[in-house]
Amino acid sequence: MTGDSGLLSPIIIGLLYGGLYAMIALGLSMVFGVMRLINLAHGDLVILGSYLSFTLWSYLGFDPIVSLILTIPVLFGLGFVIQQYLMRRAFAISAEAPLIIAFGISLILQNFNQIIWQPQSRGISTTYSMASFNIGPAQFPVSYLLDFVVALVVMLVLREFLRRTYMGRAITAASQDNKAAQLMGVNTRMIYGFAFAIAMISAAIAGTFLGMTFPFTPLSGTQFLIIAFGVVIIGGLGSLFGTFLGGLILGLVQTLAGYFFGAAAQMFFVYLAVLIVLAIRPQGLLGVKR
Amino acid sequence: MAQEALLKVNSIDVFHGSFQALWNISLEVRKGEMLALIGANTSGKSTLLDTISGLNHPAGGSIQFEGRNITNLDPYKIVDAGITQIPEGRRIFPDMSVLSNLIMGSYTPRARSKREENLKKVYRHFPILLKRKNQVAKTLSGGEQQMLVIGRGLMSEPKLMMIDEMSLGLAPIIINEIFRTLKEIRDTGLTIIFVEQNVRKSIQEADRAYILENGRVSLCGTSQELCEEEKVRKAYFGI
Image (cartoon, rainbow over the protein chains, first blue to last red):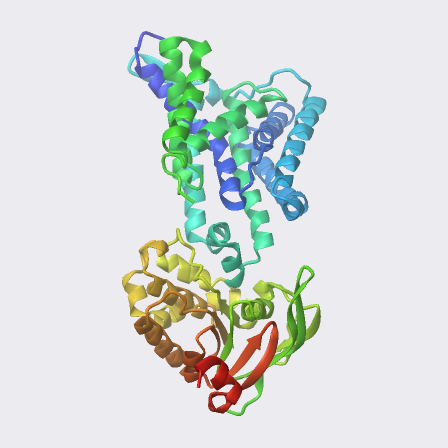
């Protein structure tokens, strides 16, 4: 972000940030799309992924990308258990109960993070995350580019999974009509568990790359949850491509607002953009009207 | 047609909360039969189908399919056993393509291996679905959607197909076309139960029929017998 490159720098940085934001939001979007659950613990689950990668990197010397071999199964399992043993029962009680459970999980995770990893700010750095590349006169960290590319790959893999595999189609079918899905022979109880677990795979990946990009604390989950909400509202629920696009737009708004009005104004303009989309197109740019 | 029973429902009682929807219902379907379930709106026809499909479980009584007790099985196991239900109101997967809807029909492990073969069969029965295969399902007309859900049901490689109120909101000419196809399907060895409110049409199309009233079987018999039954003629044909 150095040199006098005019608008080029904030635009590139905005788009690259946007990739990371999209990656964080994918799991939130999927859980809402399939189970109609606003997972208030999503940000904290992403941060849990960051801490797990951080631990494997700092104590055991794992490269953070390699650490995914362990963090993905942990979050996958956690997601499955949360859905099967907490959310499913909560859904049987009322529509609000799962929301309260999610809030509870969020509080527990924040305190858990604080006990295990202390309240100070952490970050993951590697040789490649310190490196940079040039576009014209401007310099950008390689890690930002990595965020963007990985986000794109995660989004595309998830999309193809949902479209082309039996389990993916069953998840989509159950989200569109639960009874009809059951009549096709789908064990919908199981499928919801897997849907949550798969959303948590994307959370684990997002957590690792977040840790390489931004410093994080035990309470960072809330901050990133709010960003993820913004992404999903702009992009549209139920559309993974929309979520990706929403991430890019949110990133761009943030950096451009910072460029023109200063860092203090960044988030104001982000929320303004969210508000404008809500007013004009409440289902989001690529969302499906229900 | 006097063969062994494919499906046997033995005096089941079904409750929705504290409301009893079905009272001591017994029913038998024979292999290769086309059976009609007739009754007014709240007579319990859909509840009966949902109970056979395992979406509800009876408080008393039992259900046997091919001699096996399926009373308390989960819906996905019942589909795998060979019973498919085409639910009321069509219930396509609206945002999926026609082809994806059909593929969802072959979800059970048993049906997956026969997917391509069954797709061909469905396209042969409903050529319009082949033409529309890449279209998003919700853009189909009502009649085409009904064909899609029947085709989707066929993809599960069923032995028994239960169709709930398929003619609702469809033009008579399309209803006739679908009934013609159902007979073709039946002639390939499938057994069919269909639920209708239209008594005349049902008795005309079916081999046998059960008439439900307020959650109880009030009459049953072959189409011929029911046509001659005075009660039916009075109540439903007005003669």
